[in-house]
Image (cartoon, rainbow over all chains, first blue to last red; front, side):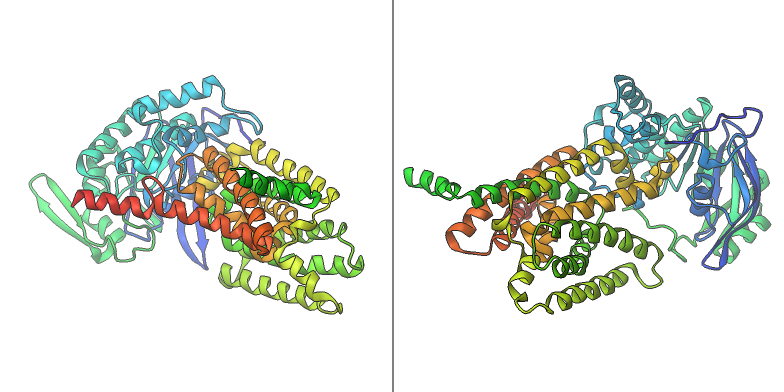
Length: 272
Length: 290
């Protein structure tokens, strides 16, 4: 029922080749080419409406590209169950009658055929995933009773239970308080140590520079991709953000203050 | 005490009451379990439209069979499955807004059904049976059909439990797990269609949506777990059916309306008193905090 193609280990975990996506007659993504290696920790930044969510969904095989190609270990994303897409918290129905463990078990569904109920091994996988993200004591809670940071970690546990090797996260830090952001960032670096490849959309350029190995600057086109020094340069930032970004020179380097957050607020909502 | 006992037993001396009671319990349980997904996925309007859309199919069967009851089930079933997949396709590819498209189609089909039925001279009684149900007229044969098709629906819901759950909670996850989401969606629509056809004689097309959403919504307010929500919804639906039938027996209220009113009563109680989520509970908490 569920297709799965063996990985060609000599191929990059993610290879994006001249990818374009037309949406309602205009190009939401245009001619994007890059590749990732296992264990990469990448921040995806760009203004609202830049196509960050859309790009993540194309990479996950949720949306089909109009032109170009995505391959995961040498074949199309729709042939793999090793990709996890972690939604924005504002897109989730938090009143849904499921517990934290139920949601994490959904990640195991990929490993189970229809008619088959979870085995002891599946529950062990769920428990160990919950322990990795530090939610083992909240397994029986209804999901709406978690804090924002806990909700985000629950989805990471779900991706772990899925045995995902590539995790695509849509604004995981948005709406979290500072301590929650920091513990989530620590978790991301744990994931990296396990060899998991992470690509996370974010608004915070400073965090992107500090906690991620590489930054991808996107505004429909791929403006720049590389380490912070290479990407966070005035002319590139202006190309991505236009006049909506304010650049401030400080002793520690160039700091970009983004003030465009809600200009075109169609792409996301802010969680409270 | 004895009189209460007699009041409960006396209607059971009629075979039609026994059959009706079995019918409302079966139909209630199936509607409630499928209705859980209707509530969680926000498909109430879809369910209502589906129930109304099958009227022309039933009407054609009614005209062809010259008023015989038994073949009507098959006409309802066919019309229901076609309508469900049809409305499903419309709502995916609508050039106007989805709910507007559904509204146009369902009202149009409903009008066509009434028009067809009204070509028969003595249509008023039969039309009201289609609209509001005729549970007291359920035959043994109809009861068997309800039992068999209801059991098939419940079995499929159980067999694809984790797929329906995943797809309903997070469709994007279902896609990245490479579940056949188009197939799952259509399967859910067909299950809904079979449920509607099975329930037609009990509550009729006009009140069908209440059987789908009211017990499920009541259960939603009382639990945080899906299997429990399904079980509670089935219990509330069956109870509403039984209490509604007795109410109808002793007060001469139309049975379909009585059942739906009891179900609505349960919902209101939960809405007011549900622990943690009822209106009064919240008010009480607010008073304690201030």
